[in-house]
Length: 257
Length: 284
Image (cartoon, rainbow over all chains, first blue to last red; front, side, top):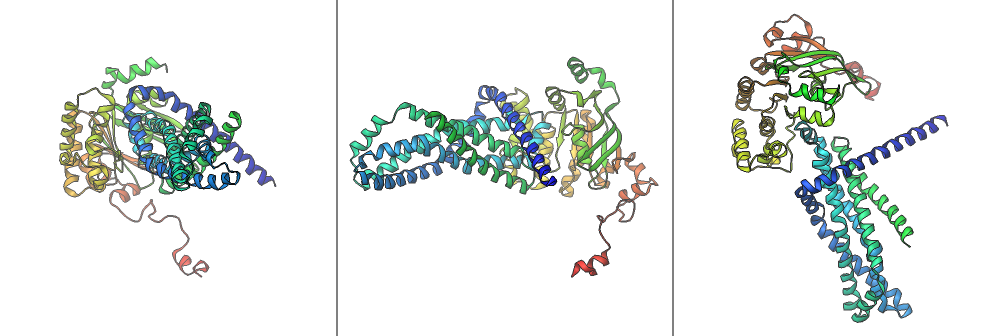
């Protein structure tokens, strides 16, 4: 029993210590961010390309099929109440407020987050970060901050593209395949979806972008510098980001309702 | 020590006259329960090529990382050019590191940059030189290590020896005062090794820099080093010119310098008896 309590105590202390270090790390990134945005925007743009543009295919394909599924499910359920014309509203609320930001963040963690964590972890394992320090170049602003900012900037755009492609997918299924009236589809959506609904989606995608990028960069930077350590950091990036995104989603939804 | 005083020490030309460039006093460093250094004292003289040698796992690379404050000792002091490096702020440390060039064991080239950009990296970060001038300097350094023709290649396309030669070009591109080499001769073919050994010597003498080499290669070290330190059991076991070490009477020094299997340094890691382990109960 004593051993169990000691174990719980030690784990608790370790958790608090890690969480504190994580917050300090976040502060370091934020402190260097304005300088990098002003002086080395080229590095940020390169990372927006790496994390954002290179994730476009997976985001667009997923968005199309998620939208298509929404069309099928929405039609079959709404048709029971003769409300199939409202399928545009149903899909728009679902995509813009929830599915767009959440699924994009999960896909982002799988595509860009793992790439960031493993890249930084391997840079550490192969002494590239130490070499930078020896060349009097601080790796935090030079390597970590551009990658963090690149992810934060890319996420809202990816979520918006996911939602747009998703609505296109719903339109394809509902209007082209299941013959829902095209006028009702778009008109009801336009009259019901408010700017604040879109703002909620934007807010969520920004928060998820910060969380996903921060976790990926943190895990890579703190990876044990071995092949196994980098592999574990990559896995932890996906798992922790997925949990964090779902928790933040619940919290923001609860506050915004 | 106040900040202005440290700044003064870093750039004070009077310090250039001091003979000792690096002084390590009573250094203690442990990694977990494993003691790596236990009261190590060592002095590296300005303008010399100093070799740090010792059996595997004695902490030679760790010592280089302590000298450059990539690691911090638990006890003892390290002075570089009269400055206690443990007291430097991060900005002052980076200022000091602009005087260092370091060749890592595995090259540590930045894998997302070409060979040319790797060598140009310190110049782009620390100077405002024009692209034309950077190109001139980088190609000169690459020519010195025989890899001017590989300027456009990526690090993944290089062999281990080539990567280390590119890393050497990068280490010397800022014309540092102190060049640190971690196992520079590993993986080099005899021709490259000969060229690099001569290059190390020539740079040291022509540019007046101080070189620190970690190496196991007793023969090559003998041709290039002015002074060698043999590190074992957390301390300096012997020091002197390579020729002096070769004729030293100490069992440890003789074993290391002549590559003998028997001596104070055990070749085998601690293990139960060979026969007992092969034929004993565990075998069943």
